[in-house]
Amino acid sequence: MTFDDPEQLLDVSEAAALLHVKGKTVAEIKPAMIEQFKERRIKADKAPATVNRELSVLSKIFTVAVRNEKAEANPCHNVQRFALDNERVRYLTEDEEQRLFAAMGDNEQLKSIVTVALHTGMRRGEIFNLKWFDLDFDRGVIQVRKTKTKLNRVVPMNARVREVLNQQRRSSEFVFTSEKTGGRLVDVKKAFDAARIDAKIPDFQLRDLRHSCATRLSDQGEELVTVAEILGHTDIRMTKRYSHAMQERKRSALEKLVAFGSSRQPDAKSAENEKRQDARSAVSA
Image (tube, rainbow, N blue to C red):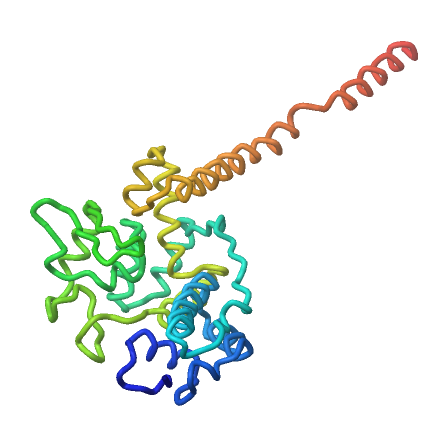
């Protein structure tokens, strides 16, 4: 059983391509090769969570190989996964949004994708998978299929999303198509990163547009259950991170009052010193 065997499952072929080990048997794959794969994926700017999921797929493949006596051990068992900061919430401020759209220039497709992400909270893959039959303009809803959780959901269109989607050319079954292939759009990372850098927006990724949508909904006082339904969260605990972001923004707003008050209200020590100074002045008089 080799990784270049045409009779193997598609997942095995994809694993081979990822590992760059075409021609080797599964028994010849060692943990060191998996570690090298991890390094290459991170250098390719893949998110740690993405690499962890790929490692899980590889591990399943090797588990089947061991079960079928094609390998003695699963090399993925000795490879540590990346620790994830699942509580990270980076959202786009209003000023950053204006700079980002200005930096995108005449790239109307990228602008449309960013707008849909900001106004629906849909994942990148969900947006790229959109087909025209998923859009119901009469009811004003989007049928989101092939989701990360394997569960379909319905996301309402607001006026801005409806306008943007209506403006897309119907050149294929997909709403957003690749100019090169005419088929499904694969990625916009290069164009997005170029605009982000030009707009001087640090530490922000395409998936953070989804976080921005959720944070803004929370800031507007929407219930966490509603936000979870829009995002497609199956566990409300995943949505609670956005309530934390809302609380931090409230705290930041209130902290601005500290400087305002301190310039007008002396602290207790200063007030006591003033009283003593007044008393000394009265005695001297």
